[in-house]
Image (cartoon, rainbow, N blue to C red; front, side, top):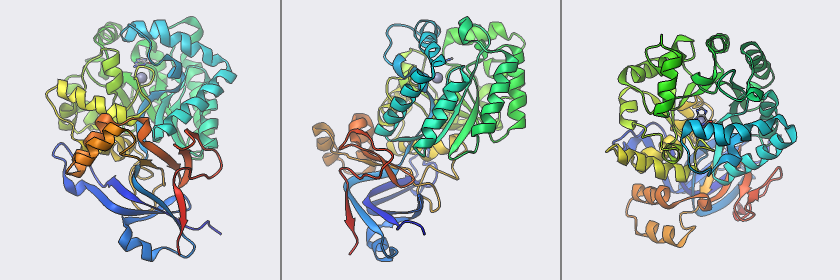
Length: 455
Ligand code: GUN
Ligand code: ZN
């Protein structure tokens, strides 16, 4: 016997396709007074409350989330859970930042107790910010990923993660070997990939920290497992690009190193993609690889400005990403605010509709998970957020003045942060309620949202 259907009444926004730079209105579905109906953790229907209320199955419970805005859960296409405590580290750019802050922090993940504690904090923080799926770096330690998947599974989350492959140009005690790295990755694939809502990503840190042999074996593993993701960094920082060119003089470009080793394909996600040329972009588009745009990180580490228009021209799938701990927020709203500013620095403009598409369905497409998540098409997994557009006096004032949906959304992405996230639902269960300001797990609790029985 399945549980009764649940219905959530609120303003509801989701995307059917990419609104593009012209903010195509046909790509967006918005119901000012809408109803999202969930059965057994999946979307049963979405539409105007006036139409759907009368069609609810017997026993359905209606939660009144008005005046909230319900949206699909945010998707973070690149983040490092072991860098939770690295966030807001002062004064360096990428290569020094790795040496000074990141490697010492990652060393601590040899300790399973530490890894477990950080995992729990990390997942709480994602949920507090409305993020329901992420593509996640572990450390070089295999058990950092076992621990992460155990914690994600206990919460019923859809997550993709992988063990870092790294056999040179890093501290001795953070190195694996080509054989051990690939053997442990294969063991993790066997144990976790496709289990519950989890997926595996083959995760060479970046070309600089992997030998040719390690990249070759990673490419072989990727070929043997086409449904597994490949997750790495490329062309983030100019010193990094110059170093990669010195290490691989035979390659046409830094991106070409991954291509030559068979690591550029569908389900490859490359973080940053700032200092690419047109040939690189064309190859990414052809190969079906996705770019994770990490604006808060790119500003914080002084890396450069992602070129959205060039990526669009090359038909590269774009996802948004926090890149914590290079990034400065776990939240997609703060990330969208900086994405807009990065676009401005390129003389480009990121409209609010496109921005929220990228944070939801666009992220799902970048990860190749659009059949499972990303919008409220019937049958998809019911991961969603309830947002409060009046959570601060300034946001309340500014959204009250907005004349159109896109003006409201633009105020939300420019001024909003975790305070806007009233609740986060995973497969139709409340996983975080703002009234408690903690993750609610594992019991069902609606916090500030009053369940109202249908009469
Ligand atoms: N490039 C290689 N490793 C990293 C990392 O941990 N963070 C970022 N932002 N870039 C990287
Ligand atoms: Zn990163």
